Length: 306
Figure (tube, rainbow, N blue to C red):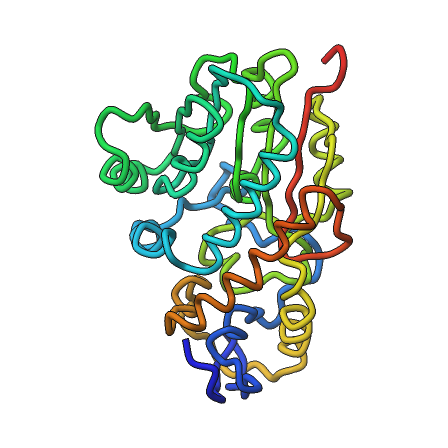
């Protein structure tokens, strides 16, 4: 990933100089014309209603190739680990369910905290996950809430999963149903609708979240946040500035959409610098609720009596 000046293009816009951070700032592209609310566009299919297509196989292949060393995946794992260490009491025999486990990049981390089961809806992702972890790792193919493995689980994790699901409240109610008494849900979601970009389009996101929006969905499902914080806050100002700037650019045709991971690969040195910058928040986030960031993390419990 070079820091040399470059040019990049948001879909439907003219090329724009990236101010010397072309590969990094290309992560922050915004599709011109998208409204600034938290809800993403939905696809209408006949009389069925509004549905979302599954992620394409090539995105999972890209994830499997990069999530062990790409700065964003490594930085997010470092923050997740710090939050888990801060908020999970010491325990033996803890049962953990990771919903939307993808290609398995977080499962090895979660094994440090208990006995882990993975649930994933994509057969392509699950095959890559089995290749990583071996045939004996407990993995299930299915969706939430209808295919949740039988509980109870002491911890359920959902890392960048909820934004993919049209009926997020139904999914959360399903998760609540498999939580053990005193159990916790730990989740991450992308933050702020005005940061909507190509990455959201490519990954078929339904929405980006604010704390209030997430809290409302949790409450409707009989859950409450014990603690929450935005994160990836150090990079928030340039991300927000570039994406807002893109709204002012003229529309000049449609380009191929790409995932952030595909456009932020580069030199080992740059990867290390970005990982260090992102990961530095692990010293703050578990103890403090940051007021803004590109993502949102929460530790959640069932409402009393629900």
